[in-house]
Amino acid sequence: MTIKFFKYQGTGNDFVILDNRDKKYDHLTREQVEFLCDRRFGIGADGLMLLNLHPSCDFEMKYFNADGNESSMCGNGGRCLTKFAYDLGIVKTSYRFLAIDGEHEATIDENGIVSLRMNDVDNVETDHGSFILNTGSPHYVTFEDNVMELDVFKLGREIRNSAPFKSEGINVNFVEQTKDADRIIVRTYERGVEDETFSCGTGVTACALVAHHNESGFNRVEVETKGGLLSVEYEKVGDSYKNVWLQGPAVKVFEGTIELRH
Image (cartoon, rainbow, N blue to C red; front, side, top):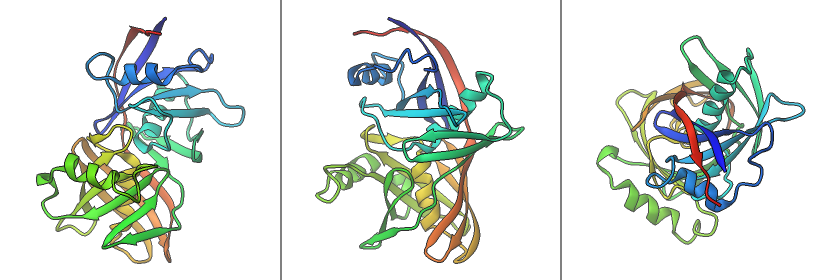
């Protein structure tokens, strides 16, 4: 079967996207998704998304990791899918779409910056000075010096495969606090990809929340990733994080056709 695909990226976090409004790709197998995401034999991506119709939202997002398994929420993926919907002619002042973790809101400004409202976070656990929280996907956040010099693949894989997390998996984020209180550097080992990605939207969000510089009220944190700059805005209310927005670019890379093997 020959399929029409689109490739998008958000700060280097890249995705294969299929327009599935006609349900043509409802029955993709795990092996087929893995093939499409393969960087040597397929198109190459950190994940694959389907844009589906939804009766009460502008669209539905279905996300698969590069290993072919359906996954939890992907922040950069949600931003890229919003831009894809816009490019398809679904033009809205504000978008509402359904993802695996519930309903989301998104907007696109005149400079192409896509802002995505993430779920509120009410629970942050600590683990020997590190943090565990769920921003649509589970994340482990640890602060380090000179984060760009770390072996993120080795260290991230060790934590991801450690006893508490091995069965379900967890994304592992290494964070460096810069001299600016509202700016951090983040590198992420992503489960399902099983490697470092250039950027992870839910990971960036998790890191920005625990790196708050105001103990109460509005925070805006600039986040430098290997793929570029993102920002996260939110309100800190006691131990909870409300009105959380992930912001950054979402760019179409190319489109084409590929023969999908059975």
